[in-house]
Image 1 (tube, protein in one colour):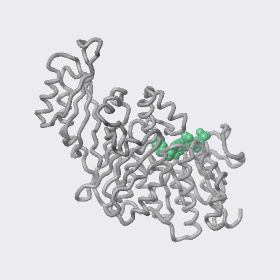
Image 2: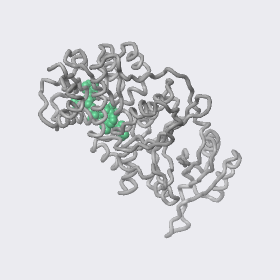
Image 3: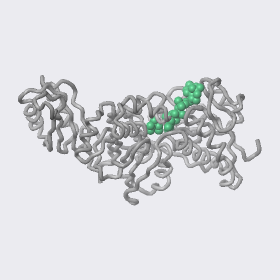
Image 4: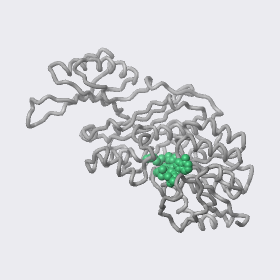
Length: 440
Ligand code: NAP
Ligand code: HSE
């Protein structure tokens, strides 16, 4: 290895890890020439669970590179930068912590790890003066982390809003365009390498929540307890909801909202939302993500691109690798992220306000609509519309779904009303609530 070559320990050789290998094999010469011949990146170790697995890669991967013990990778003197792409929060934590303690910069795409255990890891990063880079952790191939860290450094961030989980956006799109079932659409997302190893986090909203937490931490700089974030996923979305949204001029999206309030309080919530068809976020389809950033000086900017998948994510990882390599070459000048230097609080979700779409599963009998409406009125919640699907071939058939569109009110007020409504004997299960988002 010559003096300008830096060794990469690639922990994880699945969708993203093998994408990093392929990108370096294909475009490594560009990095060398664009850094004035200063940096050549060479994978010197690869961590996997099963070295015997057959893997489709650009060029042959020497069998001697593989190990199944992360300690071997971290402690290898030929590894100068560690890339963590194994996922999860246990082994990945040990590996990243050990790499930082060994003063080896870390590049990771693991948003769950940073959202759940970032406070511990950034403390180790500070103590060892060794950076963690995580561009790939939010919105796949979109360079949103660097943009917020660098381009918005002179802005107070007023808000982020966007679509930051590719799998759920892909699923909602396939349910809409191809009338696929939820399960069939999820299977496609998995086959395309968009979903997490355990797709539960994609569909229950937590993958988007981890990313929203990272954006909020970058912007506001105080520790955020993931358990305090309001998260609701797409599991309860039915084709009928999508069709109803469409008939009203909306598109149903899993939306992440991070917004600054007065007194250093921040609102963070993730939920299926009706987005006006005319809004640009309504046109973000398939695996694409989009993040609208509102800075007090820059105003609103929109960032759009592929939010998941092998090559887009590898693009972000490789960009971080070059940044880590540059910092190693010019020590003392690493652009680390300095989180938790500030203070702030989360706005309780009960105090956040939007309009709502609520679907009730009811037993059809005279008075059912009136009973629900009365309880909403008791809580001073205005109704902007009601709907129950009618079978044109049998207009006397009992309906099951009763939909209410509600005027803007605090979520806490709605929850109080819904608790009473759910107790009615004509209401058969917990009402399903989606937000109607007034995006500007
Ligand atoms: P993946 O396809 O499931 O690959 C995981 C890799 O890690 C596999 O090579 C696996 O080995 C290895 N591995 C897992 N646990 C291990 C352990 N305990 N010890 C040793 N090796 C282990 O996952 P991925 O989709 O590439 O995602 C990797 C990370 O990137 C995750 O944190 C994910 O959230 C993040 N990310 C993914 C995407 C995406 O579009 N997929 C986008 C952005 C960020 P084997 O190959 O032997 O099974
Ligand atoms: N599973 C994630 C998604 C990968 O679908 O957005 C990118 O973080």
